[in-house]
Length: 200
Image (cartoon, rainbow, N blue to C red; front, top):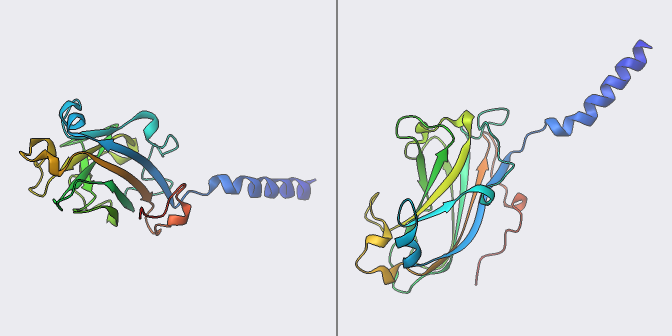
């Protein structure tokens, strides 16, 4: 009976094992949207913002980003696909801000897409401990929202709606995907659902 008991326990452990494995990466969000000057002027509570909230965020994202999988000390793969952009080659970027369930200090932290001047796909891996105010987020409490902010090349306050030449920035169409990669893992694009090839 004792041998049978341990055999059954071993079988149960094997069955449970897949559930105990923790993903090396997950898609935080994948949004495609058109953004106009009117959108930038009327977004609330802040202008030039596109808000990723509710069902737009992955509902299966972890509550705790530190354990059992450590995303806080991992990296984020940022994929920015510029589908439509006004001609002229004006430097543009999107600041990507993590809005936590619980903050400290400044209360949120931001990374970004980097600058682009024309249509195409722009990708980069950013360490989660390197971006602005990443330590202002209480990572074990999770993320409730992402704020995407369109800007020019002038710095932190360069919101595009303030420009005297908004026609260089609007309208635009974007697909922005953020994939969280756990510490010690490497981004794998084959694991991202519906990742289309770059636009021609």
